[in-house]
Image (tube, rainbow over the protein chains, first blue to last red):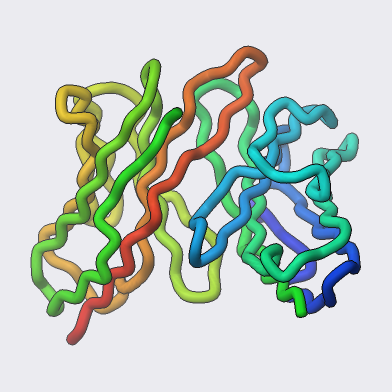
Length: 113
Length: 116
């Protein structure tokens, strides 16, 4: 079974621009979560989507948003990029049922110049 | 809120040495506990997990036991290999919120280097 895939793997943007990252979950998984990884703050939860609905959100500003499609694929968007948004963005999928495990993709490395 | 504290390292060992990476947690309710590993340039891979007190997770020679009395989940391996060099993250789930949502709360990670 194919794992979680994320595209693109690398992105370079400038301050003020916006960016969209994509995540395709493992087949059959209905829940997709997003995490930001930085050297200073470590791994932080952004949000989780299940059946096209956001059902949990971390402490990030409104510039960070996401959505999920009917095929469970998810996108996250960051508007008005700041230098501090440079990070590895990880997507994780799970079935969405109780006691299941989150499986992570390889991540998208975003660099903001 | 929930939190995870793990030794930050870096940890440098010789091949075949014994490994311990300490992890303690603070949580309400009954969280599940995880160890994830990240190799250079890659995402996170689940190494092992435990879902209730006294459970022992194990995989690839690594073990960790869920100790509720000491709120700990220390990672151990009896004989490390060069290929074990990676960053190791301890994490907990924040319980089963209404609607089944769940997020992982991670420690800061411990970088392990194993020399031949």
